[in-house]
Length: 254
Image (cartoon, rainbow, N blue to C red):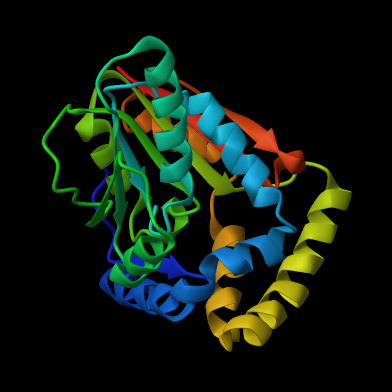
């Protein structure tokens, strides 16, 4: 595991790593109640398709322990729970357990308000220091959250630690469009429209300015895949969605 640096990126700024934790908490405290509405507005609802494809790739099964990191509103966990239950109804087997884990208590509270599924549990926890024993999880998924941690290699090492041998790792995250025309259009939308929509809907422009800046600071697909390999995962690859606007990285604990 790489030694954690003293600084970390917060949008286009570099700040003390401990300060980033506080700043990111403030962002999500501010936007929690309107987070899902903003996701629909920012992506035109396309994020739902990306999440459906990621859930299908995971293929949740009865009896599995699935960790849904940065999962505060439960969007992904509901998908996993329903999919595992459908398989269980056909084939039998024990219930799956889907642990929603998010650093931000306000996001967990927003998720609880929306309701959950019987397989789901709600937990406040740190992706860089998970309160989970070694080698117990069948799958680890983090969606649109890895870029918000203070030190990505530490979070990846924790993911590897808690997974059983052969466990699945999936990370759905905004990424780097390959075509210059898509990249230019996406940049124009991100930097001009998204902060303005955030101001209109949540009254908080700065949080959405941070979010679009954090996307630009995040490594491209190939660089992030190498980071996953360095954390001890095998068969690492990715699938681009919407021309690379988002990407699903995947690997296996070996």
